[in-house]
Length: 371
Image 1 (cartoon, helix red, strand yellow):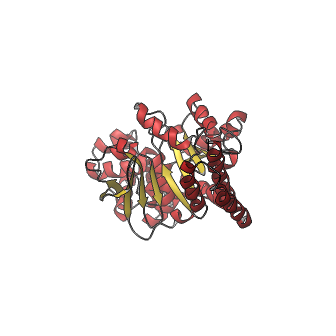
Image 2 (cartoon, helix red, strand yellow; image 1 turned 60 degrees about the horizontal axis):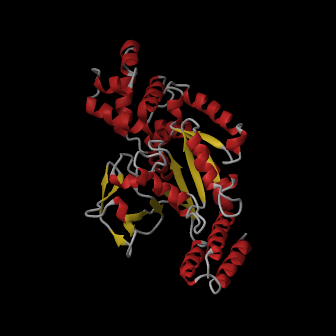
């Protein structure tokens, strides 16, 4: 496979002398891209759980999950030796911008810059999971704002004169909708230039909610995912569909000792009080309980209703007896390990092929331009 990359590099170098002058820099960038980590975009509708999934894959709460200005911008998360946020402007040179960490999430301070001024944000963060692949968080494809949706479509779907910057895509589904199928079809405009099932995986996102956040929710979600895998139209667009409870994985990865202590206290309530407390997310926060409402709100925001119910069940039954054991169990049940395995075996292991495909897509686009 290294010979494949060398061959593709040689072809691109030779092609720089015959393509339109305006496209030569594009080929130079494509040549450099052959030596970079695989680029994996995370796409889906608004509130599908894209940023939460990215955080779960990295094992840190890097991407903001609230509907702020930065969630309207395509954002790249790359490994590096230092912590840095850079804005690639729609016109002009990239600029480094300051940032804060709010509840763990990176919050760039855009100042006078507007989302419309920024082509993309590049966030460099030393993290082992980012060494093998760059993760790209994209705005929702069905946003109320036409401009926001258009950013994702421009980035992820090719045109006659351009190729997409993504080598592969994780597409988040809730319930399969015609818009989901149309988007995946657009990512597969043609067999050579863009996605085939080898570089697209469907994610049944927020899988715990599919089963109503009951304790068997992920079993129900797994059955639903298996049904999607059996759908011939969807199978032609992505190689498989896996259920993932991203918030459960993120919450497990960031669980603290004080969280465990509070969950242990709540698990000791009598069944009537416990059932009343766990009836809904609102009741968990507002009903009287031996843990403060503020602490319960924090736990609910980081674990979700299913994570809280599952944690109290596990702690109450004595299935886990420490914060680390609970954290490991939540991550194990979330489905994130299976997704990481798929990324390693179906994306990372084929990264040279996928990067070669992307480079040839750029070349094909450049050759189509008039000289």
